Image 1 (cartoon, helix red, strand yellow):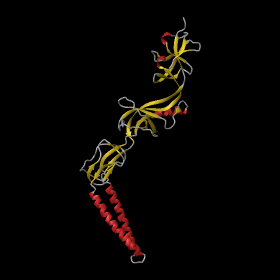
Image 2 (cartoon, helix red, strand yellow):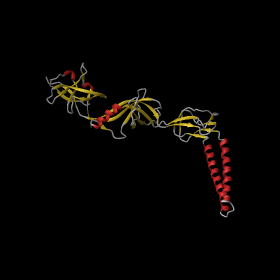
Image 3 (cartoon, one colour):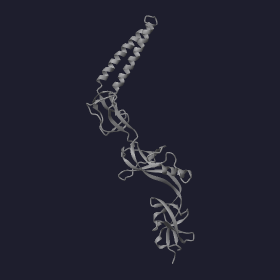
Image 4 (cartoon, one colour):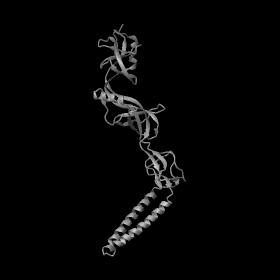
Length: 333
């Protein structure tokens, strides 16, 4: 009888991105606490709670009447002081007014100008605007409430939602091991700015937008032994909310010469040892013990036992045994 046909895959090393899954939390890029900068009664609220606001949008109005009156008074004082200084200016050159009186008039005009600017600033503070664009939360004061400058009454909180941060931690031990393998040439470092991060949301779905790693902290938390990392994600639909927990998948490096063997080709023995069947150059079958690592899709990462060019049987294992002659046919992976 002719030798049985078997399907084989020839081992070819290829680069494999090394990834790690780490838990973390969503944090806003910016968060602004809107506070009162003058005393007064809130006359108007001009936003919908939980809506998006833009930088410069009016949020509240504090009763401006006393501050408008103060500005009018400061304006009158400024006009009077400036007029006196202007009258003294030509008179001081002919000694009709003493230099001391002229200097006093100039100082009074400068002080009046400063008081006028302060009054104008305080009147402007009666209009509370959004310092950043983002999602505004609950109104922390209501119309008719008395707000206070001394205690800086908090009126609302705005959080920037797009883009948004994902903060997570990694063991300093694992990070040190990774860097040692890179220094030894076993792994290839990623180009700066190319490390990608993907998110798995609490419901198990994968967030559609990839993120980018911004930085890895330079210090280790002495309590937990962890290093903080931060990634940035686009969030145009605002699916990611501050405080949400998620699982991040981070590409850390690339193993340039990795062998992957299809999982159906690997036989796991009762003692946990893994082996595969190979077709030799003379078309005979031999059993080969291997060590496998993590799973990548439908393949196992081969840590040892195989080399480039080895022909691994993936189809027809049930009809062969070591020493048999077979006809090897390549199988598309």
